Length: 281
Image 1 (cartoon, helix red, strand yellow):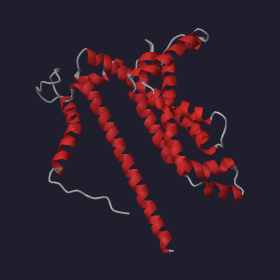
Image 2 (cartoon, helix red, strand yellow):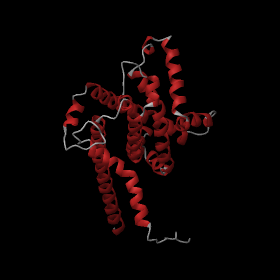
Image 3 (spheres, helix red, strand yellow):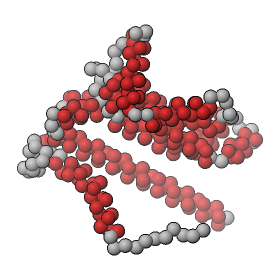
Image 4 (cartoon, one colour):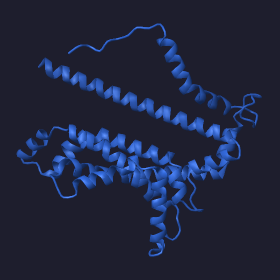
């Protein structure tokens, strides 16, 4: 097999610099202006951290953050459970009637426009509200159900791809040695697919935290998520508090990403060391 050709060009550093500048200069300018003393976000008038204090004193933003984090955590947790079950059905169960339709319905939210998904869920909750008092007022519950609906599709794709790569002979060998299917799942299957579960949970949490369109359809006056608060604030003019909020989010995501990278690198180094020791024996 021929090796992939490597092209050397004197423009590569220029192209790389332009690409990085296009991606990160807006973020850096946002961080810089979060420390601007002037209320006008495009006019620099001195260094100040007062907008961070104003952010934490803004009850509307704080309520939006707490609600979004709670819904994101609950939605991601429920999506991991449902998505894992769906992934097992698609990869481990033998052929059954409606298998193609099941796989299509599970993955349909991946390609469905958010406006269509939000409108259909809104009509569903209106219909349910005529029968059940629980859905008569839309709020946190309806947002949570809506987020679980589309987050499950993403989790099922991530977990099913890992399950297809899993060597079934290891599970079969464990059952031949007397292990029950319940024990095989928790001792062999679950640790193997755990990285996929974590990745699916993080993906679902991010999608839930970032959603604006669907939440706008299914929310009520009693529940306003962070993206809805930010969007309504930006329509009236960009506030430095929004820059401060974005800076804090960028900082938290950067720290979490670094910790995840460090743990993965440590685990990979340990795996290579164990492999080297086993080969030496």
